[in-house]
Image (spheres, rainbow, N blue to C red):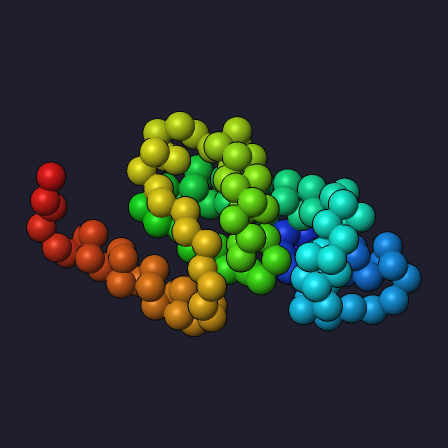
Length: 130
């Protein structure tokens, strides 16, 4: 879909591959970015912007209490993920964002989905302690 072509590790790998003129895997792109972070600022900025738009849209439309972001390049770097979150704050309704916890995951997508379900069930079915 459209989101996958713009706001994922695969999208970043495609942009970096195009810049270098050769195909690279996500792992190879992560290694290149670690070795030469200054060389790929434009590509990182483009994917960061699209990811922030996508996260903000999910929060504004669905108003979740938790959002789990999975990725090897943007989500697994504290500095890069902080940039994504800063852009999300600029695009999200304040009240919706205040009620939502955004977490970068380092697990598989399946584990993230299960964690999200558990979080929802805990918040929806357990008594509120405040």
